Picture (cartoon, rainbow, N blue to C red):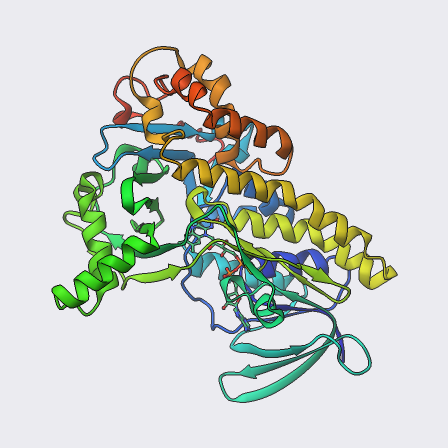
Length: 449
Ligand SMILES: Cc1cc2nc3c(=O)[nH]c(=O)nc-3n(C[C@H](O)[C@H](O)[C@H](O)COP(=O)(O)OP(=O)(O)OC[C@H]3O[C@@H](n4cnc5c(N)ncnc54)[C@H](O)[C@@H]3O)c2cc1C
């Protein structure tokens, strides 16, 4: 029997879309190549995910199972300069307290929740090919079950939510690069027995900014079970030079692990945190990020989440973008299937464009050596937080995930704040990190937790 919608990929984009569609009475099939639980990068979530979790019906499970995230700390490598951005300064109510989640558990929980909403989700089902002009109309999907059994499934509509595999845009040859963003390599692992800083112990993600030719950053994400996720994102050219040197001159075989350990130990703040720690798994690599699919939909298909576009993960935006896009495009898929009306899909994708542009600009500002340096925002004296806040509310709101509400205004504000005269004016403001910024932690209201 023909499925209404076949979704390739059971990550957060695929499972949240499936829930939205199943609730509209559609017969939804997810095909996921992995056997869950499986690990995945991308563990820190924006406050703007909160209400989506509520609507999807998983908020209580999020509260029961995952650690809470009250804000973001940007630090320089030795921790002497840091700025703390607490979401409760700009987001009212309980959604100011966000989440960090180990992805093996989070993605499994989401997929199981989709099943409980009536979605047929099959794991170990790798899609190998699709025919978007199948005989009799609709789409025909060819998949391999458990690596050996060929299966064919037909449907009326296909969604590619395959993450960075970008199944459909690669097949259709319409993948493009974001011209303004550089290629980076990310290397990451989980650690145990670490010594947390006060802001990590309180739940803030910490981003250590690394300038110069490395042009990158280190993330530290406090997860449950005393695990700390530590990742390095670094300029690909620098990584390739290091690869050659480590392999040829030093005879290192596992150059990625060596580079990872070298760079995180080069940041005194991180070195101190991991001095007695142990790595809980081998280093994982992710590369080549920042691309988009030029054509994201057609009469019987749509591309969503990382498969549609991926922006450098510095601002932890990926999961929110995937789930927000699913929520935005679901009504269009329903209208297409029920009335043959493409207008809602078109307007849905149009409404997403501004938000993606805002994030692209924000990322460029982060890496621009002439623009604002987030760790520096806490040092020196001058105005107090309230004055600083009006200038930087823009960044604060964006760090919380407010990409889509007034994107034109944000784009103007980001470009004004990148202007050198504005930087001179505001660069030495005191953030709400008080005199001793290292001691500052964001407030966690126990009632909200
Ligand atoms: C280094 C790095 C750090 C990141 N940090 C963050 C962060 O802190 N916060 C955040 O929000 N985001 C972060 N992200 C982004 C985040 O990981 C993604 O945005 C998010 O996982 C996207 O969800 P998705 O469902 O679109 O794709 P995915 O989560 O990748 O899911 C896609 C699924 O499709 C399946 N699949 C692929 N091909 C096939 C096929 N042919 N057949 C069947 N199944 C298939 C895969 O197995 C996978 O389960 C980070 C990304 C990177 C690279």
